Length: 326
Image (tube, rainbow, N blue to C red; front, side, top):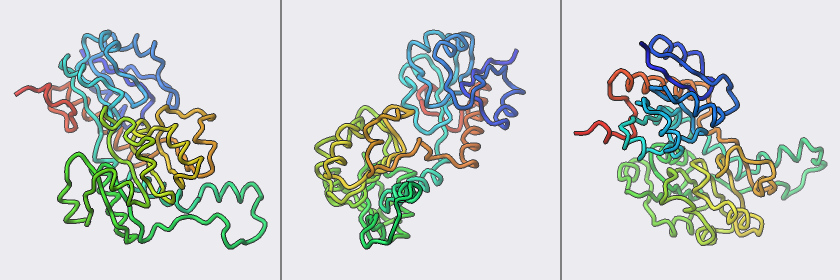
């Protein structure tokens, strides 16, 4: 008898081709609408595997309903929507999809930095609204990227890839991480700095650290006040790392020049969110990994992780290795 796998969103056909020969699939058929909680609670009761997205809350209450569950495979790098400790306690494997999206997310991060610095989306809105009537010396002037100082909070795979791109713009790169990245210091010329020092010295502060209890609201009123009034904050990690109320106040008052945001604490972000009312905010709908090739490979990797776990093999991208013991 094939193991039952619940898939919480319509996935590419290639994923179905990988899973269908080995599993009984129970898939939520909507591509752009998350599975309702009550539907997921019903489907998971006899599931052996769960293929989910970061929009699905996989908490203790849900796991209580899934006595047969052996693996949770998420099509994402981050997994803060999953109660990993609870899954580990129940010997449920948790897998994710790192590595495959590194370069794509770094591309988007640098594009967001440049768009914010040069006011690209604001300029396009200005043109489309018919407001461009004459050339003016200081019309829509932005901040220079070339030769500026970039401070990266979280110099992991994606942070290092962004630092490599910064070298092409002759940028000085500072970084702050929980651990020193000596390889990046040697190869990329990155300079380690304490967080307060990084904030004070950087023209662009780029957030690429995971969301954890330690990094929640890492950037708040005090931290924003340390930044240059001409600085740009870019968040391509998770929304909860930045205190959004504090960021709004800093941008509104002019204490901070601009922000580029691919992520928000609540997603999808409501259209009446205060940050969306500000002209000096460039906002995107969490598309860091959104290239066709990368999203397809992420979907395939999530399927491969799930199949490995159900077959008794160690998945390539296992989050909670302690479940294996030994």
